Image: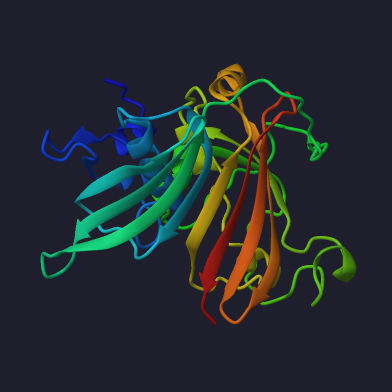
Length: 287
């Protein structure tokens, strides 16, 4: 049995022969965030249920996870259903249930995914890796009592979480290039702590390893939480294996902040400069 805390957090057991699409698991205190588990591990759990399925075709190319509510401490059930299988693609729906205060099962998370049997074709990368040096002296990202940040070695090269919460807008009211240097851009190096060979599950979680962009943009620590995240996988398992246990470079930038929601885009490269995954998510925030 793998003793790495990430693998323990994603451990699933078959619910029984009468429920072939369903697995049982439990939330992990090792990846706890402010009001529930780190959303990256929840997304990885959805993918884990698919990867464990005996009818799986190919490898993941897209995963969308919608967070209906914060997961509580304790057990849950998760069902992954292949709703259609074509010659080279397979389409999935996922649902995670957990008992609510009354003891009745309630939906905590829903997801959809596409897996595919990839084949060699012409390929090109139109999003080159930015020149971001890695130094052991780069500051590590930690915030508050969020236990999940202790499970990663995160070194921030640009866009560290504000030291002073003074409500100042980074880069001016317009932000980004128009408003000046800064905006909501963060560039960081990230790997599992302790180190763990990269796979689709770990990559899914790392695509969510950024604190809310609104905190950086406004230097105000308002309540915020991801509502929906989509991860697109550009690498296959061979490329992930070549990345080993090394740090990945992640880059996140917000695009629009309005009426209690903002979105952000993410790119993740390995040290060789291969773009492994891109991501977009919608995040709720409160004044």
